Amino acid sequence: MALTLVIGNKTYSSWSLRAWLALRQTSAPFQEIRLALDTPEFARDIGRWSPSRRVPALQDDDVLVWESLAIGEYLAERFPAAQLWPADPSTRAYGRAISHEMHAGFPDLRNCLPFNARRQYRGFTVPTQAQADIARIGAIWREARQRYGAAGSWLLGGFSLADAMYAPVALRFHTYGVAVGAVEQAYIDTVLAHPPIQEWLAASRAETEVLPHEEQFDSTGEQVP
Ligand SMILES: N[C@@H](CCC(=O)N[C@@H](CS)C(=O)NCC(=O)O)C(=O)O
Image (cartoon, rainbow, N blue to C red; front, side, top):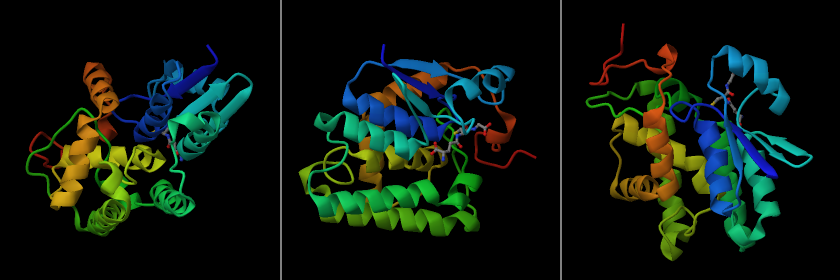
């Protein structure tokens, strides 16, 4: 098989999910190699696939791509029929801008609300530090849906790389019960109903590894001492 995607734990690796969603959207068959994070196996094998020693990484015959957004861009070129970017240049430019903003930013959200596809906390209080990131993400989703959303239920209408980038954020909001407006909630619902997302969540629930530094809260959302 020509395509191999190397990913981390489905529970913890939001960057892996981004590349995996983009690849699933192409409908191309691929081999999935899961290297569990923070294990001796990861340390032993990752260098074979990824010069940055991070997941995700995509091997397509003799082409190796790492970095989730670069993988998405590669797939958009390799599989044009998948329409991972919209045809209209200005919509595409907007989609790229918000995707890069996601890829390069929101460190407070990432630090304070670690990705955890297996959990759903009740009563979690969003730290003040993360509130500006959450507000900016809400503004992006509302603007994208207002400008481009008429053609479908994704950020730019049809599913695009922008959704591959923001779907893990929607899952984070779901995990932590972040209070959002109606437009943002509708987008979260779209993400949750996406069959590949359901598949990813089911696979996450079947995983057995527990990374303590990613499990900072008890079931009520209280910080574990
Ligand atoms: N900017 C990278 C981030 C990749 C990344 O941080 N991956 C994490 C897992 S989500 C990783 O491989 N961590 C392993 C390590 O740091 O040892 C991307 O977009 O792909």
